[in-house]
Length: 189
Image 1 (tube, helix red, strand yellow):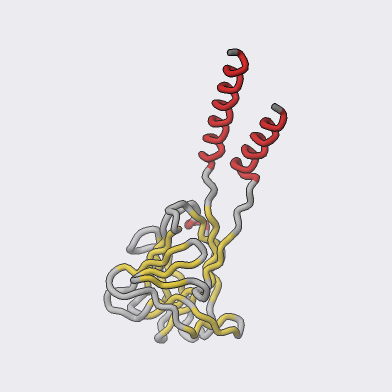
Image 2 (tube, rainbow, N blue to C red):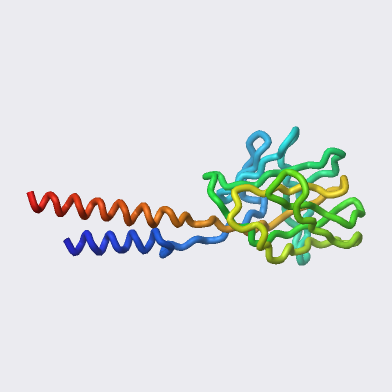
């Protein structure tokens, strides 16, 4: 009986948040493409409209050249939707970005396909810039990246973390309680 109780308590502690949740860093180098989607580290990047998610080289941050997501100069604007493969919620912690084609504004990031927060830089930026804290993108299920002013933008090193499901802990408690009731009834019979 004590063994069941110890195992049950350990499971409850894990389900209620004792398990570790680690941040994902999508750098567009270790994933794979399929159709109009790019998959990496549990996240999906889907090109809306025609085309696919392009991952060219040429993103420079602190002197290091790497691959990144390109939002290519297009008249209608290129939109890439980011979401978790399992459909769960996540927090967007930070990302690197830069604009191309001599433009000031670089890109919009939002939870809708239009509008959103404008991430801007000066016209002579040659290096990627960190987005900083992103409190407006907590506990979201999808985010849209869109190029600004018909220019091009590059995005790299997206830091995101899955939001744990608090309901899982409650369901675990209910299940363990039901097992305890069943066990007690078996002993009484």
